[in-house]
Length: 125
Image (tube, rainbow, N blue to C red; front, side, top):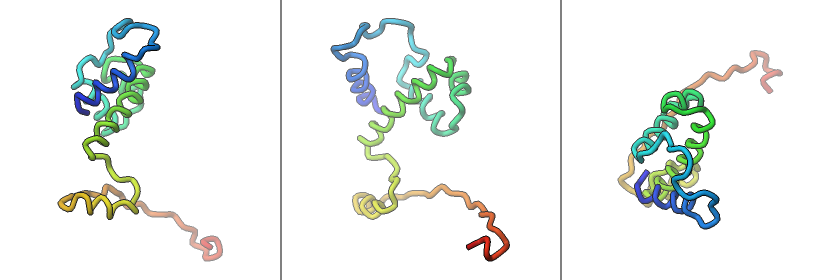
């Protein structure tokens, strides 16, 4: 999450004309520094804890954790998209990605899981 992306998000969200309260009004947020915000969202995406646990880890309630997750996810996606670091979700677009970045190295994270199938041939069909 780059500093410029966060600044753009703040301008679009907190410094808009139709805002009812001025920026900075109300309680001070638990995640005041940009580094805290980045750690919060990276911990969430790495561990995927329930929001109650995420809030506990960062000294806030579940509702605030939920709000921060949604807010910071959007900002992180914008930053990674700007830096062209978002993972490709469509396998059909892989050729385009490899053509644009010929020295790209990537990993596939997967786990084999057995599929339970009926032993009776008629049931399997």
